[in-house]
Length: 78
Image (tube, rainbow, N blue to C red; front, side):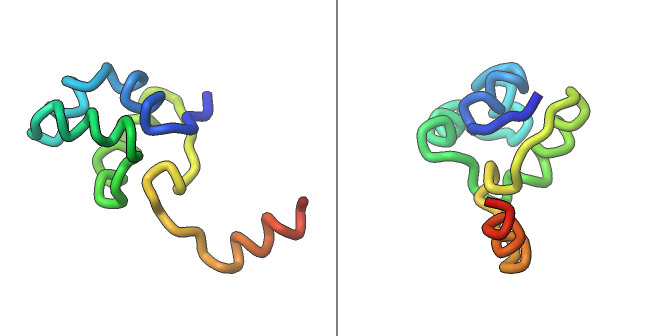
């Protein structure tokens, strides 16, 4: 299943408190991620967890920037 939002990713990973436990942070931080999306530095902790559960996702889920060649390739397909 493709995860397309931070909200869905948090749910898939066990909820707000479970994700907060992964980072050792307050659950309120994760609640902000539900609204604003994941910051880029969360990729290295959450991406492997999502993949272990059999989920796919776009790098944009973690505010990762696509390389210019990737965006041009996507534009040419549309």
